[in-house]
Image (tube, rainbow over all chains, first blue to last red; front, side, top):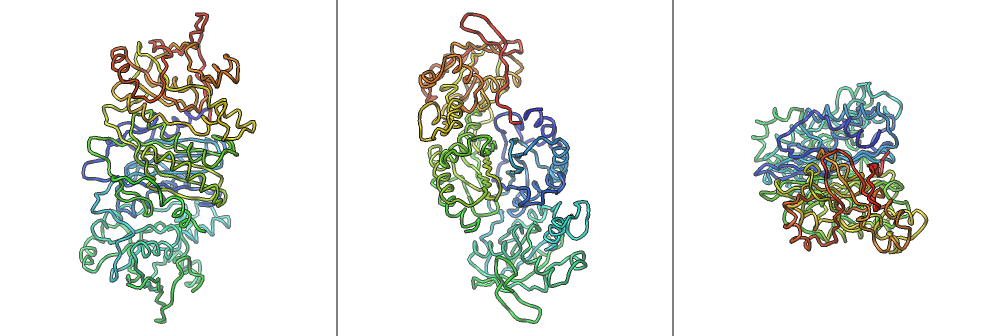
Length: 317
Length: 317
């Protein structure tokens, strides 16, 4: 079976049809229509086996995860997803793997109405690179650079579960095992709905991929500010706390990565609007602290002591 | 040096600034403006070391080539290039390689006014995946599916040199060696200008990446037609004919791949317009034959005999 037949078998009969796709998979390029009054929001992200996920992760999880981490970047911009390009580099043709990958990929694509509009299949070490495209009005897009002193710092969902899940996967757990964050690592949920609800509310936003402190630090650097974060407020899931001591859970929550939650800031004058729209975020939201003018990331401990947090992680704490 | 510093050092200070880039490299995604009355044309292509180019190819050639083969897809659609995303997966940080790659990449980007608007850097086996974005009016875009019986079949430039160059590179030739197609393989020229000039003229178009017969066959399949091609008309460069017998040169020209010329069809009623615009293509153009109603690809030999041509070009698996 050659490249063209493979593409046709697994990726031409995709579930999502959109009126703005004038020409999809099958020509040299796709022809796409961006609606009036909307700007194009574009991002690319790569998954490498053994680096971004354990080699043994199920094909379905890999397919879901590849699209989810890319959609997460659109969520962080407050963009509505529209199209995706899939560049798949595979060491060999494994139809069972491709079938699983396509299933995980398209299940998520269908949920967020994302059309696959192009792709590439190459031979080489497993590498999955997507570029995702969405829409947002220019004046409502969320960036990293809009945080100001006094803004409140929030995060969606729970932190730390994905990192705990990755540790369990590396120790040999199965992706079907829903406990201990394995499911959270394998099937991350892009916070698209939250991102859309935060348009016109959040002053800055980012998705938590590298770890909460590292990603919050990107907001702080881009905005030229600092932050004070209360460790006691960290949203730790009951499942996480069942599997490890609180101090270990806090460490994972601050530096673990792979959560794909949104970290965002809200100015005081928009807090009332934010409260009225919270239910539209479709997930829990936790206030963790506030933006401060000094360009440091400080941690408020439960005993009231304050100490600097290293943006790279928790190890200096 | 970490990922963020590297991205900053080599890819933030890029030479191309465009007014339609509202937000470029540095946030979760880029924010881009598509002009009114234009549709978005998008394509993605991957280069794997040892598969799409010899492992020893210079970093500068790899940087040029990665962008060129992607721009070639825009050329085949008659699109004007605008933006590119670069997903780079590298086995290790090699600053000399990155510096050369960026030089080759940006030299070509500057020529076609392509802005780098986002990217990703990952660790893994060398893999370069780009997605390119351009503009075209919906009613002037070139596709594979518009060829009709009676249309003339053309190709830009020369065929076969890149395949000859690849053979010499694999035999140990240096990329700086301009002879025998090494330069043509290492620094392919995307036919952007030709693609733009063919708007409103060509009934179908494709870029020659897998080999002339294989790519022409894509037009034939998509259009539901066949073609008769005169082997004696194949554009063979003097350099190619100096290095090998004519029969061997013809073989490379028909099935060699990597030329990144445009193969296109022109209806008889547009031939006069085409003749008047030929100088705008900025490269030589050769008529190779015509589209026929029977769905076969036939080869007209110099002795007048006709025989079926095998469409098999480069197979990725």
